[in-house]
Image (cartoon, rainbow, N blue to C red; front, side, top):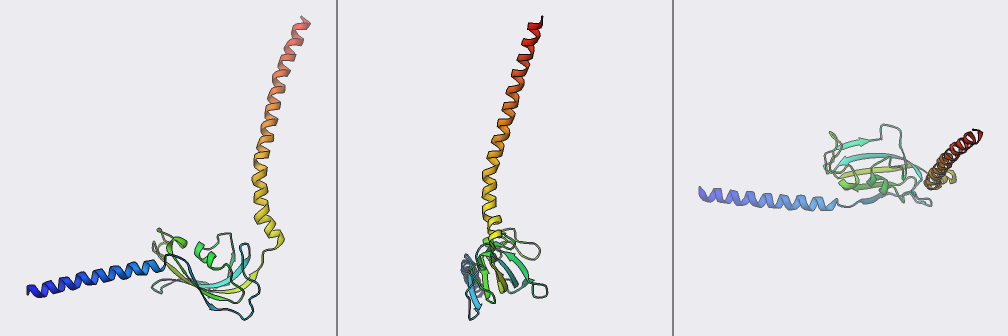
Length: 192
């Protein structure tokens, strides 16, 4: 009887050890973003870059295969790269794709929903798998590039300039008032 209990204990410890190793190996697999091309069109002359607009159909799953979201029953999702309208890992996986391309992206937790997850659908520290089809690709126009890249830099330069001008105006206004009061006192004393 003691021998059987000892054998069972050894088997249980071995099982727990193997399960822990498999879990550790499984977690190491999804430490970085992995993008696999499933279907690539024959001609792929124009590829996506930051600022471009994509329409995509997607199906998102947990690593166990449970579907968390899908756009297949809806209109395609509109994604403007660089605007953070989707999770970071999905946005990164959409760089360099072309219209009609299908990809499978395995996204690690830190590029998905992180430690907090998205309860109740997505648990914390969950790696995700997205199957994505790029329905359309629109390149960034010159106007969009101007608004997205140049305008923010221009605003950053204008804010300190405007603050400096307001400060100068207030300083000059305060200086004029002090001098004005002094001159008014001098005139009153001369009249007496």
